[in-house]
Length: 84
Image (cartoon, rainbow, N blue to C red; front, side, top):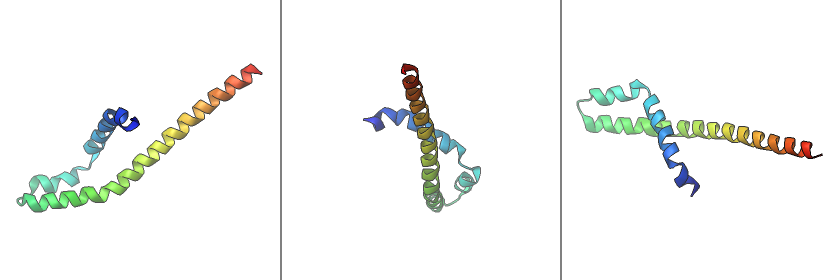
């Protein structure tokens, strides 16, 4: 349920990742005479980037989650301090 609710946002995030891919990744594909071998090279290049992309997304998620939790706990503590 949470995943389905976030898919449009994830799609936007992944589009920005796609747009940020280095031109060097696409140039051989665009200039290739043999599209089959260029396609294979491109797929291999993208597959080699997946672990790095996964780590980067996980690091961003962890930072954002930590920030959100700190804000939420800070508000709870402030509320409790005002009640005393």
